[in-house]
Every structure is written in C-alpha cells, then in structure tokens.
Amino acid sequence: MQTLAIPSTQYRESFLTGAAEFLAEGRLDSTYAVCLGYTIDSLAERLPQFIEDLKSLADVERSGAQYSDRVLWLIAEDQYIGQASIRPDLSTSYLLTYGGHIGYSIRPSQRRQGHGKTILALTLSASRQMGLKRVLVTCDSDNIGSRKIIEHNGGRFESAMSMNSRTFRAEGRKPTRRIDKLRYWIDL
Image (cartoon, rainbow, N blue to C red; front, side):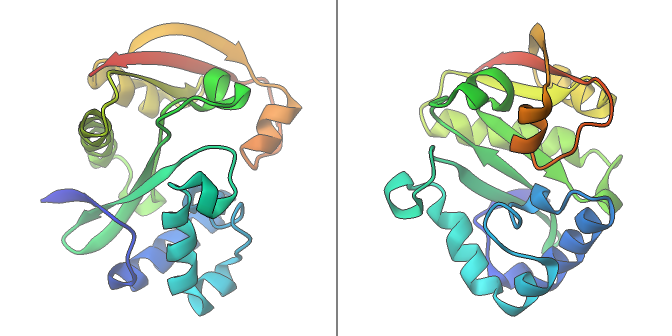
C-alpha cells in the first residue's frame, strides 16, 4: 500500500538513497535539499533539521519563504518513493505561470512502476482535503511520462509556456534546449 506521509527520520535510509539517485541525475533539488541549503553530505549529517525545514515550508511566517508549500513523501512498504508538494496559493508569478499548485517527483529507481499516477492521485485528494477546488499542475514538454500521469488524473490541457533562463534558474536547472511548460487544470 502506498501513502503520503509527513517527512520523518523513520524513512532515513531510503530517503538518503533516493536523494543520492536524484543527485546522480543532477536533480538533487527534487528533494528541496539545494534550495534549503543542503548538500548530499549535510543531508546525512543533519537529516532531522532538514525534515524540520521541509515542514516549516508550509508556514510562510516560520520559513520566510515567498509562499506556503506543504511537502509530503510517498511511502510504500516503509520506503521513500518520492515526494509531492502542495502550494495552496499561486501567490507568485512563477507559481501562476510555471509552478502550479502541485509538484511531484519519483526517485529514479522507482520510476515506470505506476508510482507517478498514485502520487498525483493521493496529492489531489490531500489538496481537496485542504479545501482546494481546482488545481494547476504543470510539466515540461519533454516529460511524456508526467504528461500522461496528469492526463490520467483528469488534467485538461490549457496552454504551453516557453521557459526562459530565469525560469530554468528558479527550478535549479541549466537551459540546454528549448522546453515549454505544459499547463493542466484539474477540478477537484
């Protein structure tokens, strides 16, 4: 059974293994480590503090972040599989244009096993419980798997937005070629 859980040191080893997998593909910030000031080494050394920092993202006053971001981990058989984030208010131009209400990532070794469909379905349910009625979910135009996951979960395509160098920087990435951000709306 797969569930969304509040980040916890209970999942230490599988989370650190997943973080190393993300690092190997150049996407450690899929775990929020980079934006919170952690490296792969400091994650291992300071995991309890990292988890507190993740939890604090849901409270703008506590975190000092520009927007509220509730981070949840997908857990299966007591193992970290990936994570989702729910941003209830599209309070920045980046979120409104590119980021959307929901983000999710599956660690590389767990992809293509149906976890993406599950994490989005569970995140939509959690969003509904938070009182959201309609959510914006986005993905890169070259991410066919994510596009199928969003459409499977009821996503209706709205538009494609060109990503510029500033957008890539906001996502902790370097532009390598032209990629659009595909925007989908899902009614809850």
